[in-house]
Amino acid sequence: MTIDALTLDLDGTLVDTAGEIAAAVNLTLAEFGLAPRPPTEIGARIGHGLHALMIGLLQQMQADDPRLVGRLLADRMLPVLDRHYAAIVGSVARPYPGAREALDALAHEGVHLGCVTNKAGAAARRLLERCGLAPRLSLLVAGDTLAQRKPDGAVLRHAAEALGVPVARLAHVGDSRTDVQAARNAGAVAWAVPYGYDGGEPVALARPDALFPGLPALAAHLIALRQAERAGCRGDGHADAGR
Image (cartoon, rainbow, N blue to C red; front, side, top):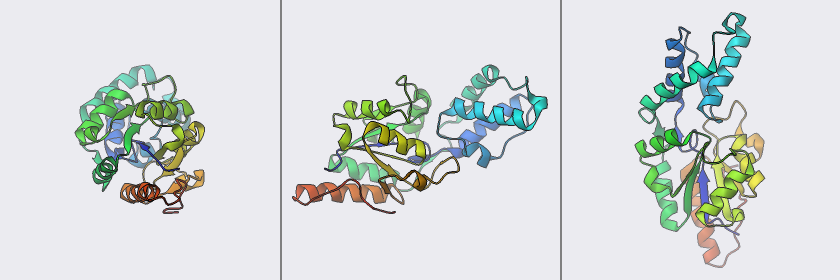
């Protein structure tokens, strides 16, 4: 059985967003008279949504310095974070090399394409538009689209239904264990790329069905898989490509 639809994680898979996320976080901290945090520390927290990132960072800052307890109030700081991020989203972020071309090749092959992210919908749409990716995708499932978020299997089951394919013929590609678990929980094929934001745990340790060096290699593999099936050859979505 081959793959008729592909969903892609956004931050760290399609687009390198770490720089502008770190900038928004540090602008927020500065507004409250706090020192900036290293971009690497902030980047390690990407993957569960901007608010979850900030709340986790504030908790860590209070654990490191008890004098900050009571000063770091999420209900005051999150609206400021949203304001700063809305002002810069898509201004620094760039698609990873070959991402646009890979999507174009897959669309030409007839693969249904969507983005599934835990990022809030407004920010995700703006980012995809500013990076020139929105016209290449027929579906966006964001962190506030459903009551559930990745890794809940309901998210990718919803995506498969919206794209009009059985979930077993959908592959999801991401950069972290969250993405691999989301695919597993839904009954989809779990693919991964080794760059991006893995929370300090290499995504290979989550044992995806295939690990590709980048989206161009993934696209080439999927196109070959579909062509082989059309030619009557036996194809298998659980490839060893790039492992």
